[in-house]
Image 1 (cartoon, chains in turn brown, red, purple, orange):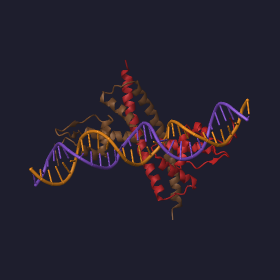
Image 2 (image 1 turned 180 degrees about the horizontal axis):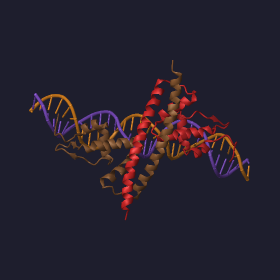
Image 3 (image 1 turned 180 degrees about the vertical axis):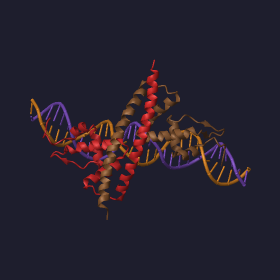
Image 4 (image 1 turned 30 degrees about the horizontal axis):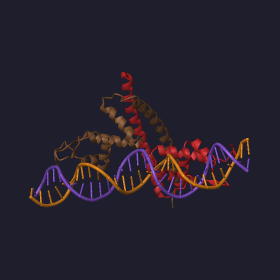
Length: 126
Length: 126
DNA sequence: ATAAAGGCTGGAGTATACTCCAGAGTCAAG
DNA sequence: CTTGACTCTGGAGTATACTCCAGCCTTTAT
C-alpha cells in the first residue's frame, strides 16, 4: 500500500485536498493543473505541490472566481510573475476591487443575519 | 409610454435592477419573488419594493449563496422574522461563519493579487 | 382604428462545473 | 500468479441558473 513516499497517486491528493478524483481529472482537462507525469503503467503521479494548488483552486472558486479566471491567475505564477497580457493585469485589478466590494457586502450581510438571528434567540422557540 | 407612475412593469424593474426580464420571471417561478399582481390584460405589475428585493438577490448570490438559500433567508423577512424552522436557524448560523471565513480569505487573496500586480507595475511592460 | 413597443406562456437550449459509469489495465502483497 | 485495491479513458448524465424563442396578446400614442 505504500509505494514510494514522495510519489503521490491521484487518490492520495484527492483525500488530502478534499476534491474528488473526477474533479481533479476534470481540472487537468481544463488546463488548471499542469499535466502530471505518469507511471510506467499510465497512472498519474503528483508531487505534494499539487495538493496546495488544488486547495488554492477550491478557495478561489469559493470566493466567486470561475475556473477560467483561476486558470489565468495561476498561470502567472508559472511564468515567474510576468503578466501574461494586459487582460490579466485588468483581471487582477478588477478582482481586487471586486474583493473589496465583497468584503463590504459580506460584513453588511453578516450583520443583517446576526440581527435576525439574535431576534430569534431572544424569543426562543417552543 | 408612461402608465400610472407607481405601477411598474417588468421591463422597468428589469432596467432598475439590472436583471433581465427572463431572469425576473425565472425568480418568480422559483418562488424567490412573491407573485406580482396583474393588469387586466395579464401584465405583471410591481411596486418599487420589488427592485430592492431583486438587488438583494443579486448581491446575496454574488456572495456565494444559492437561490435556494436566498429563498429561505428572504422568506423570513415575510413572516415577521420568525424562524421558519430549525434548519433556517442552522442555515443562518452556518452562513455567518462562512461569511467570516470568506472575509478572511478575500483579504488574503486580495493581498496576494496586489503583491503580484505591484511586481508587474514595478517592472513595467515593453 | 392601427401600429409600435412591450408583455405573455411553455418549452427548448446553453454554460459551468462537476459526477458517474463501463470495461479494461496496473500495482504491491502474499 | 492471483487477488484486491487502485487507476485509466471516453462519454453520458446531472444540477444550477439562466437565456432564447415562437406565436400571440396588451397597451398607448396618434
